Image (cartoon, rainbow, N blue to C red; front, side, top):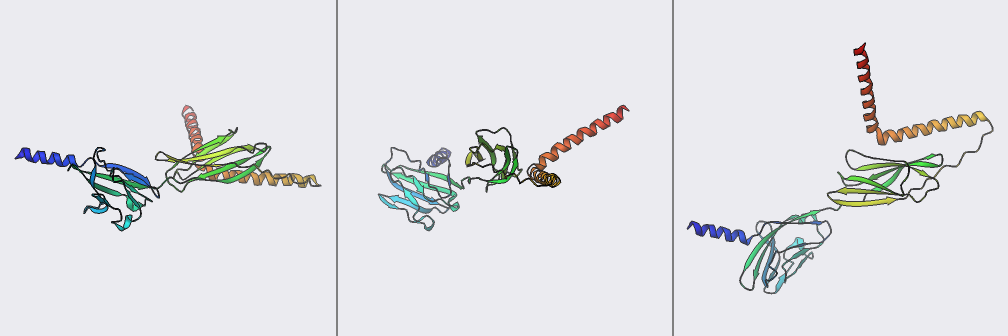
Length: 274
């Protein structure tokens, strides 16, 4: 009797294979494999969902029905040869476990379960010019790359390369900044920002132009000229400081803390020797 029970359990386990996992993207199509033996000629295919085995697509003796459940109407395709089910225009509600029961013309049967996960594709990042600061022979450009997705990693690529550039990324993984110096003679430098998450990438590219303001006319009085230069330099210095503190404030604080720490250690050592 015990041997008979064990045999029945083994047969039941053999009928249902291990759970397969399939993933798809919102708005795309995905095919759920039935797992049918390729040598079989299928006489019955029944795809169902929920613990009560609600049928969503069936095929019995050549009669196919794929409009059985309102949520999937107009979105299913059933291959009666392989038993595979294709779901079109995926939505988040399609994320669940699917079951399929199969019979062949020889009287054999099998059952499989497929777990479908529907996710959203990584969105395309955007690049904006946060600042453009004129400098002799060119300008400094500050580019900010951001993504609507959270927890992404950013990388920058510059072609052709420029002599001076700096990268930084915020701690939340929602944006990254690239600072570079452009010559007025170069108008073909392309900056590409790549966002990455879960082995998926998306890119955005821009080609910023360096626009330098025209030189102001020479004033008749040298004192006015010098005064204007001083005021202009002060305004430019304040603007540069604000931009640097906005984008690199945390790094500056860290470096300053390191320097002051070293100074305290030096002072303590000098006091100890004294």
